[in-house]
Length: 190
Image (cartoon, rainbow, N blue to C red; front, side):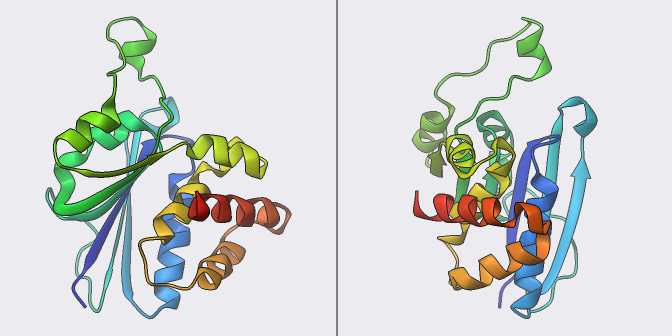
């Protein structure tokens, strides 16, 4: 199998690391060679966080170069737009429509770009944009956006839903399991 590449991008504290670990665990359980690499920006200060997940028969490097990502999973619209050059020509962006203001917007030095999902689609990018935050809140916690996004991503994989749920069970504490399972289902069915 050709190596597949997934980038998970967001802002520090949104749960991208748990999402990448869940995805890595699922793919390992399916028998793939998996490499996960975490690239931290100013994550402690609300800056960009990027995680690479690569899987296939044999993966030699954990790094994804420009033009290689099959999927970019984004917790926030501006982060999705920031990383588009890493997407393959036939790749797909799965993104939350939430907007998290970066420091230049907070300080008034810049405005948050408008209509980002529409602009990416107009540029020929396959964009699956939806309100993951609203679904996470419906599941019981705004912190479940990461699992909602994994639910949405799962629609593009030929892996039974039960196996995704089993990976969630192995990845989250028991006291949060029911809420995360619900978040995954809401994302998958949205």
